[in-house]
Amino acid sequence: MDKQPTAALALEDGTVFFGQSIGTVGESTGEVVFNTSMTGYQEILTDPSYHGQIVTMTYPEIGNYGINAVDVESERPRVAGFVVRNDSRIRSNYRAQQDLQAYLIEHGIVAISGIDTRALVRHIRSQGAMKGIISTVDLAPDSLVQKAQRSPGLVGRDLVREVVPPEPRRWEEGLFRFDGDAATSTETSSRQIVPHVVCLDFGMKWNIARHLAALGNRVTILPGTATADEVLAAEPDGIFLSNGPGDPEPLEYAITTIRELLGQRPIFGICLGHQLLSLACGAKTFKLKFGHRGSNQPVLNLETGRVEITSQNHGFAVEEEGLPEELVITHRNLNDNTIAGVRHRGQPAFSVQYHPEASAGPHDSRYLFDQFQRLILEHLQVPN
Image 1 (cartoon, rainbow, N blue to C red):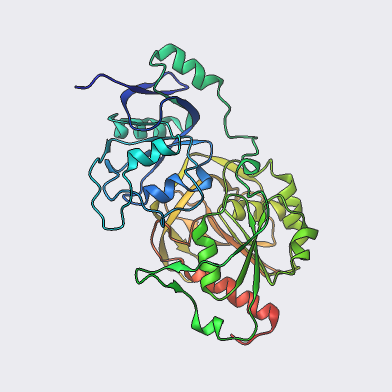
Image 2: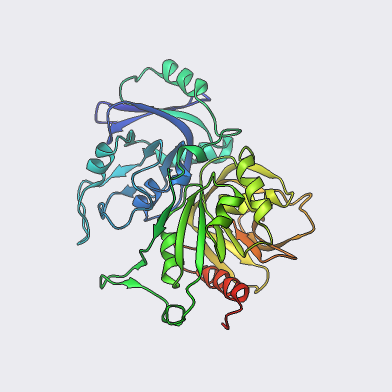
C-alpha cells in the first residue's frame, strides 16, 4: 500500500486488513457481510435490515453517482460499518447532492477503503460471516481482534427493537418518477373503496410503503412490537409484515402477534416478515453460512416456472425439514435451493425471502404486490 494506513478491519478469526478511513473517526463492531450489487449503495446503507452489520461491497468502484435525498430507505444509514475497494471522489449524476465520504461522515459511519475486498469476500465465503471491527483509532492487530471477539453476534439478539419506529404513522408517498409525480394505480384509485393496509414495521424499507400506497391503498405503519389487538384496532383490510434485521427466532412477541392475526385478514410478508410468518405457522429457521445479499439473486417461481432476478438481504432462512403441512413452498433460491417463498394452504397469507420492492434491484417480482392487492379486494368482496 502506497499510503500510510489510517483505518483497519479485523475479523474475529485473526484476519486483519489495513486501508484508508473514508468515514467518521472512531470504531464500530458488527457482523461482516458482503453485497454483490453493482449499484444501490445508498439504499444498502439506509436499509434497516443491515443494522448490526459491517457491509462490504464486492463491486470495486463505489460512490460514482453520489448521494441524493430521494434514494433512501430510512431516515439515516443503518449499517454498523462500510467497506469498499475504491471510493470515488468524483460524483457524476445530475441528481447527486453530496459525495459518499461526506455522507458517511455526516451520519457517523466508520468506513474503510483501499483493502483487497476480493480477498475479504473469498475469506467470508469460505469461513462464513463473522464478527469484526473497523477502527481509525486503534490499528494494533491483536487489540482489534480481541475487540472483534468480544463483540456481540447476531444469533439470539433482538435487533428489531433497535430499529422499530417509536409510534404509528400514516404513509402517503407513492413511487418516485423522474417527472416528479407520485405514481398511483388508476385502476385502484378510481374505486370508491380505498383499502387500508397496516404494516408491521420491523425495520421496513420505505419503497415497500411506496408500492402499497401507489396501488391506491391507505397505508398505516405500526411498530413491529404492536399486538394483534392493536393491529386489528386499526381496522386493516390487509396486513403487511416487513423486512428487518437479525435473528427472527428471539422475536416471540412478533411471532405471537402474527399467529393471532392469521385468518383475520390477508397477510403478505417480505424477508424477516417471511421468516416470522413461517415461524408463526410452526416452522424453524437457521443461519446461513454467509447469507444472500445482492440485487442479482435468481429465484424460481414454482407455481409459474419463471425465473426472477431478485434483490436479497438476509442471513437466516426457513428450514425445509419439518416444514408445517399448511405451508406450501412457492419459490426457491437457485443458488442454494433454499426456500424463497411460501403460502398458507388454508388462509390468505404468503411471503417471500427477497425484496420485490426493487430498491435497489430488478423489477421482476413486482407482481407480488398486485397479488397481495387481489387478496385484499377479495376479502372486501370488490371485483378485481
